[in-house]
Image (cartoon, rainbow, N blue to C red; front, top):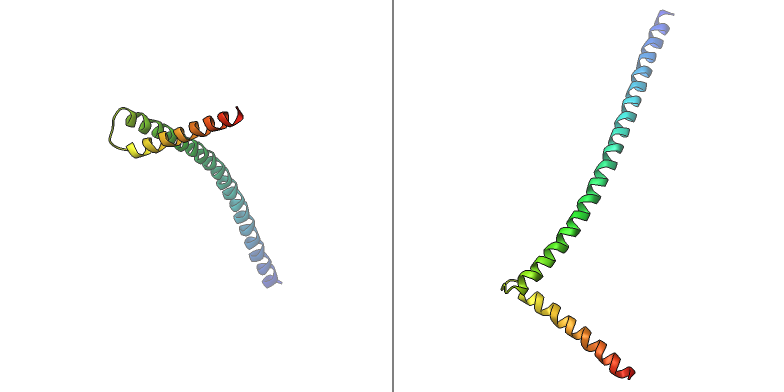
Length: 98
């Protein structure tokens, strides 16, 4: 009987160890889940910042080009051409209505 009792004690210790590991794994998963949520929010904020900075950079490039900078003149010219085409299209629509 002593051998059976010893086996039972060993089994009980292993079960307790597994339960403790399970609890620790659950806590780790909870912590990682919280961290993931926090990092997702930070990523969303950074993505918004990137969008705003790109828009600001685009505006600054246009302003810089309007002030006579050589860099990006092609971009400004293309933008002006597209605006002129849009205005021409509107004028054509108005003349067709009349």
